[in-house]
Amino acid sequence: MSYLIWGLLGYFIGAIPFSYILPKLKGVDVRRVGSGNVGGTNALRAAGPLIGGLSMLLDTLKSLIPSIAVYQFTGDVKITVATALGAILGHDFPVYLGFRGGKGVATTLGAMFVICWQCALVFLGVWFLIVTASKYVSLASIVGLFFAAAFGYLIGGEMIGVPLVIFATLALLRHRSNVERLINGTERKTDIWSYVKRRD
Image (tube, rainbow, N blue to C red):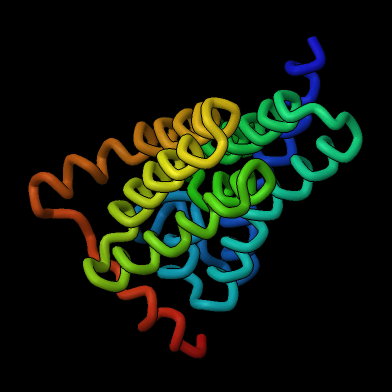
């Protein structure tokens, strides 16, 4: 029962759609532009680097902060993982937006920093390399998450590896349409650095 309670706490915090709210302040509905995804990358494309960057940061913090707080309060790794998973599911399927959310990569990263900060750094390293070389954010995210999960198994066994595999698999499922487009050669490329240099 405690896992469910903490998981629900994580869910309702994770469901706060920062990547929808912040662009809305600029008059942009991310559900109606670009990919239509309620996530940081689409916020970056649609509303510029400041709002996009803040969206990504807040989407990361909404799993990181509750997970840290729950671990400090309970000292239980499994309850912490349940809270983190709840936050990721909240981002992916937010009750506040009719369960139509993002793909959970930034929120997964926040959870990863709590469960295995070294794995989070591995993810970031792989993500930056792939997104710079290929300009495919989806590919970088999927490969980075599974690399991080594999690294988690190497340094922490099942206690770390299993949750990270679950997180990575959930992200993969959320990226199904991206995977199809990658296979078909129709996936949209995103030059992250050109967006970062924008001043709007």
